[in-house]
Image (cartoon, rainbow, N blue to C red; front, side, top):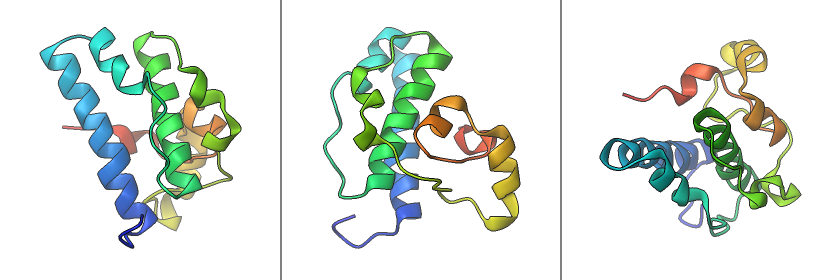
Length: 118
C-alpha cells in the first residue's frame, strides 16, 4: 500500500500469495504447521480492506481445515464494509451468493472460485 499499489494488486500479492504459501506448507509439512502462519496478528498494511482480508483468510482456513480461529480475527479492526476485491461488477451477484462465511463476517465479498489455486 505504501508504494501506491491498488487494493486489487495488494489482494493478489498479499492475500493470494499467503494462501499459496499456506497450501505449500501443508504439502511440505502439515495443516498444523500451516496454521502457524496465522498465529500472530499480521502487521498493519495501511488499508482497512487488506487487514480485513487477512482476518477473513485466517478465519476461512481455520473453518475449512479444522484448526482454532485466531482471536485476532474477531477484532473489529480486521473487518471492513462490503469490499469486493478484484471482483468485476458483473460477478458481484455471484460473490454475494457464494461468499464464504468467514469472508462475509469480515465484510469481504468474493466468489468461491477466487480462492481456487493451482
